[in-house]
Each structure stands twice: as C-alpha cells, then as structure tokens.
Image (tube, one colour):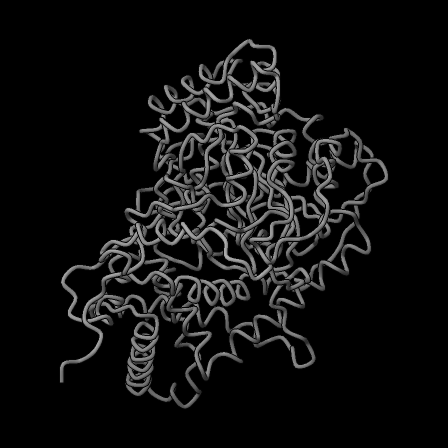
Amino acid sequence: MLILFVILRPFDFAPAYAKASAGKQGRLRRMKINNMKETIKKMAHLARLSFPETELARYTEKASAILAYVKQLEELDTSKIEPMSHAMEVKGWLRDDAIVAPKLVEDIIAGAPERDGMYYQVPRVIDES
Amino acid sequence: MTNQSDQRTIASLHRQLIRGDVSSVELTRDYMRRIERIDPSLNTYLLRSTDLALKQAEEANRRFKKKGNVTPLTGIPIALKDIFVTKGIPTTCGSKILKGYVPPYNGTAVQKLINAGAIIMGKLNMDEFAMGSSNEYSAFGPVKNPWNPDFVPGGSSGGSSAAVAADLCVASLGTDTGGSVRQPASCCGIVGLKPTYGRISRYGIIAFASSLDQVGPMTKDVTDCAMLLNIIAGFDPSDATSLDTPVPDYTKALVPDVKGLTIGIPKEYFVEGIDSEVADAVRNASEIIKGLGAKCVEISLPHTKYAVPTYYIIAPAEASANLARYDSIRYGHRAKKCKDLSELYEQGRTEGFGPEVTLRIIIGTYVLSSGYYDAYYLKAQKTRTLIGRDFFEAFKKCDAIITPVMPTPPFRLGEKLADPLKMYLSDIFTIPVNLAGLPGISVPCGFTNSQLPIGMQLIGKPLGEETLLRIAYTYEQATEWHKRKPVVR
C-alpha cells in the first residue's frame, strides 16, 4: 500500500475543480500522467537515454514521486538568500602553461573499445543525403 | 573470531611488522587466504589485485629490512572502493558501463597509499556510481552484512565497510557524497570519517556530485582512522577544490580527554520516526561523553527536514552533468551495430547504466532544464545556504554535534528497493553534513537486541577533524563496542 501511496502522490496536487467528479478526476489524472511521460521521454533524450514504453512508465512514476517530494522546498521563503554552489570557499588558480605527461595520450586512447591507430572509431556522423 | 584478528589494526600490525613478528608477504598471503575463504558469502571484492599486492608486499619487506622509508602504512593490506581509479587495475565504479576500463593513472589518495608502502589488496563492491544506501544498486550483486547476511551493509561504500568488519583487509577507503562512508560504517560496526570538503583530493575518484564528494578512511578503530587520514589528507594541485591548509598530525589528537568541550544535541534529530534502540544508544553515548567531562547542550538545526529534498536536487543535477562523459567511445562499454553516433550514445548509455543511475540522470536533467532550473536547482542551492547557516549558528554554542548516523539499524536486503524515497531517507542525518561541507565521523555506539551495530555521528566545524577524533577516541577508550567482531565463516 505504501508503494501505491508514493506513486500517486505527485498527482495529489490536482486543482480543486478536478475533484468535482471521479470520472473527470480520472481523466485529468491520466492527462497529467501522459504529460509527465512526454516530459520524462524528452529528458531521457536530452541525457542520451532511450527505453521502451514499459520502462518509461516506471521511470515516470518514480521521477514524479521524487519531484513531488522535493517540491516541499517551496514552503521556504528564499527570496533574500544567496545560492550556495560550494560549502568551502574555493580559490581558483592556474597551473603553469607547460606540457606535461605527453605519453598519457597513448595510454588514454588504449582504453577505447574501438580505435584506429591514434583515433577513436565512431559510426558515420555526416548524413549521405 | 580469534583474539589475533581482534588485534589486526594498522597500529597493532605496524608494531608487529617493525618487530619482525610477521612479514608483509606473510600478512598479505594470510589476508588472501581469508578473502578466498570468506568473501564468496559476502561479495565485498569486485577484483583482487593478487600479483600487484604480492609485489608491493615484497617491496615492503625490503623497506623493513633496510629500516628506511617505513611509514605506519608500510606493509599493511588496504582495499579500495572501486570508485578509485587505479593504474593498470580495472575500475568499474560498480557499473557495467565501465566494463573493461583500465585507468592509465592512479588518483592522488591511492598514489599516497602506494608511496607510503601500503598493500593494495583489490577493489571493493559499491552501489553503482556511489548512488545508493544499501549496496543493492551494484551491477555486480549486493554485499551481505557480516553481522547478519540477511541485512544490508549500508552504502554506497558497502563493500568497504563489510570488508573491514569481516577483516578481509585491515582498513579501506570509501567516498561520501551524502553519507556513503558514515552510513555503511554504522551498519557494519566500524569507524568511518568524512573529512571537511577539500581535505582530501578528489583527483582520481570517479565523480558523482562534485560539490559534495569526499574521500574517507574506513577503519576498525579511531586510532587507525587518524593514521590513515595522516597519509591521504592534503592539498593537491590536481584538484582545484582541495584545501591549501597544512595537515596536522592527527594522531596527536588521540587524547582521552574531553574536558572543556561542549557537545550539541540537535533536537530535530531525535524526533518521531527514529528507531527507539538507535535513539537510546546515541543518548547513552552522549551521557557517557558527558560523564567523561564534556558539557552537553541542546541545539537547533531548524532546516534539517529540508536536507534530503535539497540533496535530491543538487546531487542528481551534478551527477547528470558528470555522467554525460560516458559516451561509449573513449572507454568502457560500447553498444554494437549502431547506425549513427546518436544511436551509439543512446544505446551504449541505456545498456550500461543501471536503473537507479538512470533515474537520477533523468531527475538531474529535469531540474537543470530550462523552465525548471529556478524552481528546483536554484531553490535547492538557496536552501543549501540555509542548512549551512544552521550549522554556523549551532557552532557558536558548541564544539561538535552528536547525532545518530541513520534513523534505523541496518535494514533487510530488499526491504527498501521498491521505493526510492524510503531508501533516500536512510541518509537523513548524514546528508546535511555534506551540504554544509563539514567533517563527520561515524563511531560504533551499541547493538540492537538482534545484534546489529548502531553508530553515532559526531559533526565538527570546518577542518575540525582533530576535535572529532579526540571525542571519538575518548569515547572509544571508555567503551568496548569497537572490540566486538562479527563471526564470519
């Protein structure tokens, strides 16, 4: 039962009119799920991931639950708060502009799953058309 | 377990090695036999670097013979979470996507261990890309808790904690982004330290969330923790976020005296929902510390409840950027028969990443994407400021803070797998420390009725590791918890 609760949570934010009738609520809920599915599909594409419909549904459920959970930050007034990207003060610095470890290039390319001499091998990039 | 194994700490073995009671090669072989015998039931090692370890042990023998260049770690068998890149030794980060990856270099912490003469026994199991609190998200099967194989060893450094607890290495290194050193240390009844952000170089640890990741020693007692920290701490030009601050001799902090120190007890950490055995054990520990001469005061960290939601925006955001580098081209897993570059990326990444990592990449991409950035990512960064301020204010009243490491004892394998949020909440007390960049140490402070370990967390001011070690050492000297070992066969 707990799992069901978590899955449904993100859709508990439906506006009041959505609760007018069970049928209407069901339709709205399905619409929201479909919208979220499309969004998650888009995010997956941006992150260069792709999966079949069944997995998409599973990721949508889990992602929706987490996104709904993290939304509780909205309770806080942070209008006058500066954002923190690092906890400790980071002093940037530059090293000398000198070539170091030139042999590393060979070591690095040795790890490629497919290579051609000192080049990485990839499928065709430019369309023939 | 035998008395001999009770004594197998860095400190005790160092004395034996110096006296010549045992040689590093003998010790290394002994650990290899023990791993061979016991590890199949625990699954802590992903790779055993047998040849390299024996070579290192022979070199250590020579160092002892020559009586030169001997450090407290010379000849001591250490193992590494498989997140540390190791030259010539395959490194997976618990993921199929790094299949076949053999790094061309050693990270700084590892190189420091090798320079000190430590024996690298192998690479330890972990949650994939350090994302998890139970070690169940490893692509290579879960690790079992040596105290009871039906329970998780914690995560993400679950292999590191279980291996130390079961004496399959003398000590190990883990990494901690939201509790991944302290929480598994607590689950397995060992000591785990997450130092101040920047105290140890991150160069050569595979990045998860760069503003939170930190290397940490995992050891059988507080003395070993200080000895290991001495070797690996310090500024590193290869990590622009490492702190350019002198490294003290941390073993000098091992003084059994807490008089004059004030310990804060945050009221928000002892609320409804916390397991009563855990709460009692930590309260008893604070009473003992008080009895040893420290002053205890109640403090407030009002934004505690917002730490987990803040973390689950910031960490996936940084992870989605860090994990963009896995392109199926330069190293690791490569998808077969792809017609173009785009398909190669998508197929390689989809095949290579496990479900939890995939989920977090999706969340991270979402919270960083246009239209959601301000509502999620920027909001979380601002909340992070508030959480940091809570600690800053609290440390005006105290020198260190005592809390439980986790709200429950170790949980059963599979118990939290279906519900990611339930899993995330097991890090509720460790996450704020990463967000604020502070040092935190997990120290054994009791057992449940069913004989599972309980840990307390001590949180310090920035670079307050010495104070933490002093309190932890004083407590340890007054108690016997760290002497209890699991019976593993």
